[in-house]
Amino acid sequence: MRLDVCKEVIMSDITERLDHLKKTIQEDDFLQGKGLSNEVNIRMFCYNPKDEMTVRSFTERLEHEQLKCNVQIVDLYETFLSICEDMDILEGIPEMEQDDGKEFLEEQLTNTIDAKVFSEKIISNFSSDKDLLLITGVGKVFPFMRVHALLNALQEDMNDKPIVVLYPGTFDGHYVKLFNQLKSNEYYRAFNMI
Image 1 (cartoon, rainbow, N blue to C red):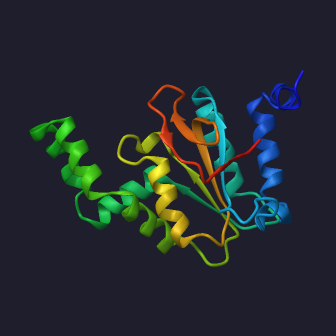
Image 2: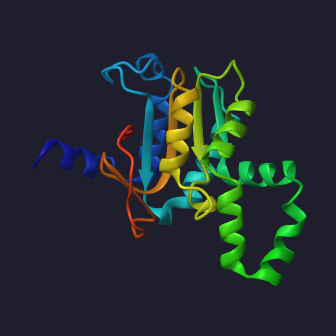
């Protein structure tokens, strides 16, 4: 049996994997990006979408735990709502959907709130005392935001802090595939975790 297959079998339980993630993000080598050959410190923690509630529970607990590092957790859906509030469009969205249809609304929101807008909002709210950015809510903002586009925008301005994406799907080192079902999108700058 190959080593990577053995590791997958040993670490197949989501709670074990999340516990290992919590331990890993506190390690100095991880926070400093050691072993990445000068690549950006972006990591994907992929999980089966059926484990979404377990992952959400983990992030809620993580916010209140004493860790060796300062983690800033960003829920992309909460970020999306905040952007809509800033643009003073949040209350009008249900009416727009009713009057113009779901497809029109999706097109308008996708064109108005792109990856750069998301990135700017995340960066403006990122506290300088934080050691790590942990991104959640990837599935909740689909199809308005795609993680590969967001990471491309973020890496320009956040190359000195590690970024971990909790991703309900798969990442093979070249392509992300949301929910293990949707069309893969290319993103090759990240590394898989655990």
